[in-house]
Amino acid sequence: MTKEEVYKFLEDKNIEYEKQDHGAVFSMEDLEGVKLLHDDANAKNLFCYDKKNKKYYLIIVSGDDRVNLKKFKKDHGIKSLNFASDEQLKEVLDLTPGSVSPMGILNDKNNQVDLYIDNYFAKEGALIACHPNDNTVSIWLKVSDLIKLVEENGNTVHFYSNSSIE
Image (tube, rainbow, N blue to C red; front, side, top):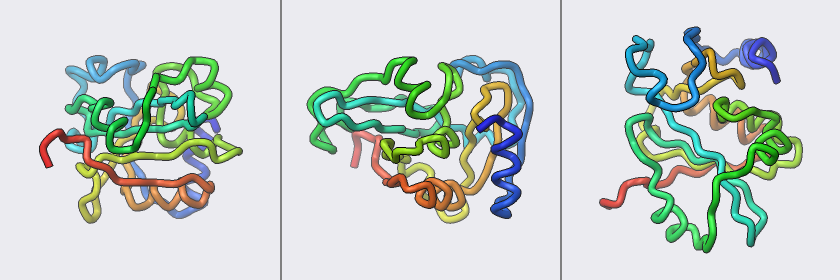
């Protein structure tokens, strides 16, 4: 889906969202100095692959956090977890590097990706920022709406603890 298709899709589903154009963002550092609509809803997305079990994971944490991959692997019984290649990103989510987003899961026709959202976003009514499959725009929508969309696509969604402290 292009960003215009994502907007239309959200509007057809009656999902409220806010959007903000900005320069291309390839990392959280690229957002430094940009006044965003909802700083507390920024999210960092990692697209990973477990070669042994042939599983894909889209892992989301708060934009200020680092993903604790060692803990994620341990908690989910994964021996080897690597970042998915650019080719896998294109093949599975139809995205290019720098535009990894949960909206890309809507392109996952074979339901190969499990979405893991850090508990930071589990609060009632919480917002989450993501790209509409284009890293020059951020959109904010309710986490509950995002979950609904991903599950309607046939993918699974899990909340998890990224923190080393329980």
